Image: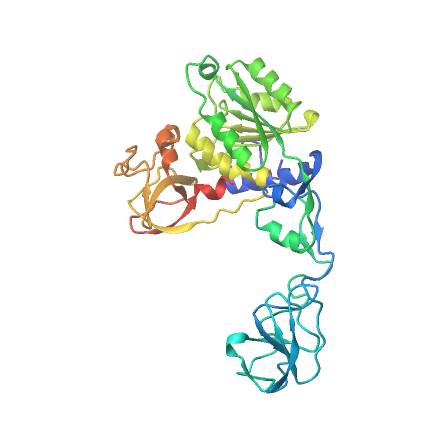
Length: 407
């Protein structure tokens, strides 16, 4: 538990996410290790830091077809009767000489610049052209990466683009952690008896899988305390992470938090986010497992999982936004919360989906997170706006697109 906080203190979602990210760092060493080819490394988590075994590039290279020479000297240059290609060893030039060179070829010794071919003037075995500075069109040795430089941290989640640098460093495979094994459990008698559909578990499985891990649906349990407790305990002995849905509020049959307190340490319960407030995170030390207890309303479940639980699976709290013009006035009912307002984007305008003027008429002036959290049509939004204050029509807002958090 973070010092100075009680388990049930209503903290910001950012504070909750920070706690979750720290929990990730503390539990990474519980996961097994593997080694994968670069083509399979996207979305995987590095098991070890990566340092450069040598400087990159190893030799200076031309970045343009043209002529290489020492630009600190003056024209004309004697044109050497040779050409240098990417597969060649570096040539040796002397003072006052130039040589034909192609993109990617090693820059000859004594040369420090490349004049692109369309600016070159050739006559009587000599090269003339406009003045250029040393370094022009030269990818200089060691300018990209220094030998021994650490470029990737252990625990870092790799993206597709990282294969470019890793390949340039000479790696054809990398050490990674095995994906976390995640058991999904729905709670609620109405779901267990088939009277209500389980809308949360397929969504949560999709998020976990998109974040690079291995979800397994483990069914449901009714609202019976001992069955809830025992099922969580059993799954915690099988999986690295257990994700439950429902039973996280303060209702008479909301047993999940009570069960987690009996089984382990609840790090926090509830964040100042609407919808999605009653999330809980717990450590079950006896089983070396982490439990995320997600509220049952599906839209709020998606939002709070994406903001608070995501750092455990990806290591990232980043929320890139795109600017848009807010389309309607929207008030908030209670201060002290962050509100996640789903919006549809159209030609730079963000229409709050749920507003009476939108295709989903839930509220008129004041944002209604409770009803909206259950309104599955809200998932057709393009993203959401986080705000602690009322928003005015015409105001510029930052929209978090859903693809940003679902990868």
